[in-house]
Image (cartoon, rainbow, N blue to C red; front, side, top):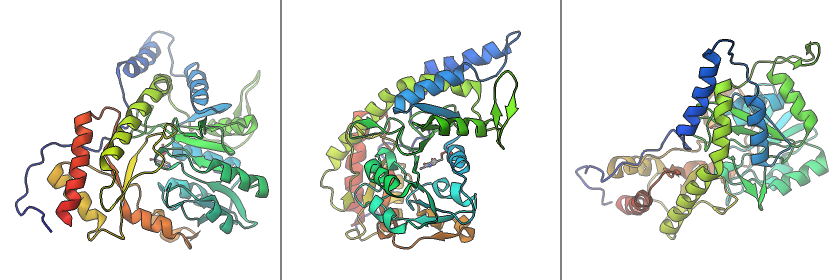
Length: 390
Ligand SMILES: Cc1ncc(COP(=O)(O)O)c(C=O)c1O
């Protein structure tokens, strides 16, 4: 092992930014405009017309018939589980390679979480693995468009056609994602997006949306997110609902952020492709699959091939930071490793590809604003760091 005995100061620092997209003067102006208007005589913070504008713009951006704005992707998933009436005795199938709420949205309603394996090439939930876990109790399937790469939408459509089980996509990583050139917002029963700070668009740090091609489903989500209200000459409350609304300044920023989403994704994707070119053939690294025009470019996730590396991923991650000033992130520890799962009824059998991937993945700092020389430094440092630890 040739790690230098004395630590050297890194040539640069490349932090893993907590702001995933671009937040610019037009976004600040949009928020300021509604805040100022609310403060003027007779002003208010009621969400119209910004809510309608944002929902129409976001639905169009994702190729769906409808979008319902909510205050997070976690909330969006909760609402979908509610509308599907997920309850104790039901089973919901999802991927182990995900953020906690893709699974806990269902367990929170008393359902058993059934994990199925990912496709080792794409790291997205594998329809063939899902098929093996379907039982008469299966009430929903929740694939994730991992890192911005679309899951196998046709494979899941075929499962729904054969079994009737609805698919709710966790599209937290998937603003702008397409599958074979087609935007994925209308896929399955619905898709749940996130506009939290590290996503490619953000609505002031938190936010989400449910998109769907089913107007009745959209209406149910709309009711549940606003106390069960149905507006008309007389307000009615038709179901148990909650208040999961986005605020007016967030909605105004949603419009400007959606307008620039393509620019963010294109710039980020170009940087990701360049990094892949520079890392091609690096011994012991597995580069991300599917970085073509359809990719939503949320994360650049490499894998340290555990069949070849003589050191653990954590050691590599720490070395990148201390020796090269490179910040990284882990997406994700396997979801059932969180303590909460001790109390969650789940089936984790038969997921070797996800278990291996979760030990190997590391997200590198690639952003829309990364400069060519930063991408070059990143590639050079990644290669050198692997050499250092050999
Ligand atoms: C795959 C996935 N699903 C859901 C979420 C939750 O999103 P939010 O923070 O908007 O609730 C995240 C957040 O990072 C995520 O990565």
